[in-house]
Length: 530
Figure 1: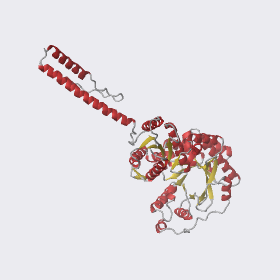
Figure 2: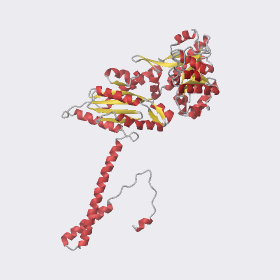
Figure 3: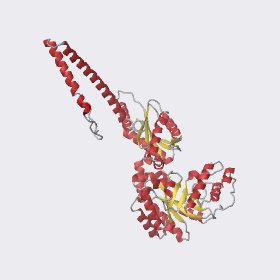
Figure 4: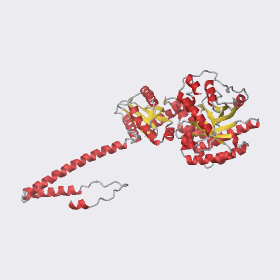
């Protein structure tokens, strides 16, 4: 013991687990004690002191063994808890979900066990990736940590909420029917729509929920989860908060089948473009068109881009899809130019397009093939698209600008890092996020007006064209003209339509927006601010 005081501590092993305490010394002591007691009992030649020490040794070893067993039990329980618990949220994890579902189906398969019903909810958070991109992954983690206590408050003691992975959750409802599951889905949707406070900022999210039941919908855990996933994706496509699985939606809502159908549609060039006009607020003339891709699905109808573009990203189809859109949009631009029109064409691109080494060559080749000058094309990209890999995107944008085409920041104001990067990007246009434009109404907020005016002034100070999206009323249009906004785009100025309908609208009368005073009275704070 004296020597051990002077022995310096060794370097701790960080990678490999430390050695567990051995049982050799206590075991040797216990064996020696047993030998002494045995010899003393048989030969009666051992003194009482030795017998007492031997007995004391056995008692100490017994106590040591009891503590070891207790520690082992505690360690086993802790390891089991960790094995079935998601570390970030404190909810159950995928392992717990699979174990629970497999135990249920095993019991239900036993004829000696009374059959039980079960419902499973597959919950997919909408736009969670955008929160990570705008606020950082720490904010996304904090949102997930807040989810657990909020959602479990609406569950029964027998209901189990788990985090399957990423932004996907699951709820196992034992002894419940579809009506209870649908009611719970409504409650979960309402709870999710309440704002989350992340770093002092109020954030709202939504979710798409799929509901599947057992044993009616599936006979095993894999099948049940697949059915719920199909229902969830159907809810996402139809913009419903939740969807209950039925066999009739399986063909139309199966994500794997949709990916295969989308790939076939891209390869067969069966996607169509609609064009939405941009109006010059100085004279009311149409000066540009944004190309918006649509997928005419044989069963689901005309699917808008927000519904299938994430599917294309996941399947690695953004490259060929963007090439198809660029080709169709620039070909249409060439037709309009041949007819004497100088309307510019705007096309949306994603981060995967910008980071594609061959993307610039695709743009140059498409412009050259259709004989359209680079000045006739504007590529639109969102803030979150750029900040994912700013250095790489900045280099690509600089090269695109060197060709002579325009670059627009779409949905400006929806992110929170714009000003830090805006001055370093050689862009030509800002498109105000529609959430600000929606507040410019008779009952809007003064803060929205100040933000829009400041953004317009910022854009003009940087020499940029400022475009406002989401214009739905004449009052909003006239107010933006008074604020100095350059262009307007929205349902009021024109909905996305096919090329022939766009041409008819472009030949029509111009909008009368360059008036000194708005035709619709504004509230006092709007008039004063203007």
